[in-house]
Image (tube, rainbow, N blue to C red):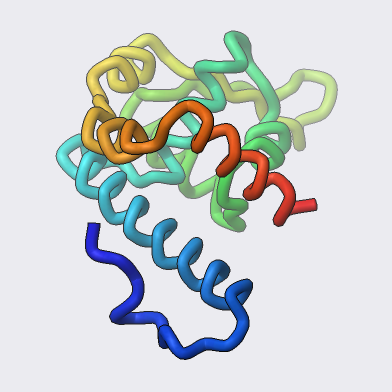
Amino acid sequence: MEGPEKNINSKLVKERIKAFLNIKYTAGWLDNHVNDILQPFNISEQQYNILRILRGAKEAITVKTVKERMIRKSPNVTRLMDKLCDKKWIDRTRCEDDRRVVFVKISNSGLKLLESIKFDEVDYQIESLTEEEAIDLNRLLDKIRK
């Protein structure tokens, strides 16, 4: 992988700033790979994230719950779900007690779609880390978010 050195001023005094920029650069780099993988399926990363959340839920959950579980929070979750619903990858139902509440569930065709999307290239990039390095990286990233 070409490093961010070309894009990050290597004369930065603070290594923490360089680390921050390196994380942002790497996140963008990974995003590009994920987008390349998802593009043939005509699905965005956020839509993919919604489908994975719904698959993991194993039953209908509220749109609010989906929003809370998303990796990247999005103000247009309803529009994203509209597109998923149009493609028959999710099913929506209104709560009978409170019409403002909407439940969503992944459909069988949504499950089949997820099965067909393979992230081998991203897995390959992550495989370059040993199990111990991955543990260290996860610990450090968790520490940043605290």
